[in-house]
Length: 106
Image (cartoon, rainbow, N blue to C red; front, side, top):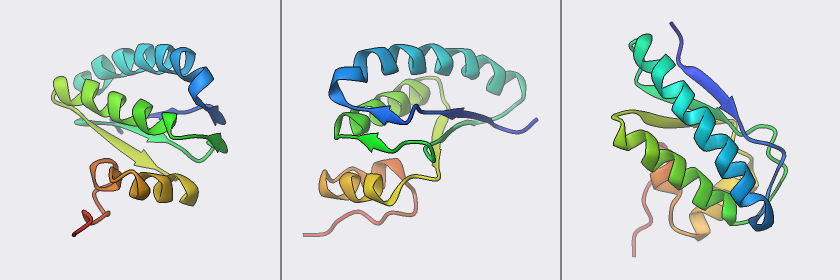
C-alpha cells in the first residue's frame, strides 16, 4: 500500500492558521491509522497548490511533523514552492523540513 498524500490549501496565512491547522490535524490523525494499517512509515503532504502564504505556514508544517513523530511516523513534503523553501532557509528550519537541505553553518 503506498504512503498517504495530503494537500494544503492554496492560502495559509496567520489569520487562517487556526482553521487550516484544525483541518490538517484531523486529516493527520485519520491518515496515521491508515498508514499504520498499510505498514507505512510516512505521511506525504503535497505543497504544489500552496501559492499565498506567510511564515505561519512554517509553524503549521513543524507542528504536523511533530505530531507525526510522536506517533513514530514521518512527514514527507513534496512539490514545495521555491518561495517556501527560501522562507524556511531564512528562518533556519529548512533542514528540519527537507532531508536534502544542508544545515546552515556559521
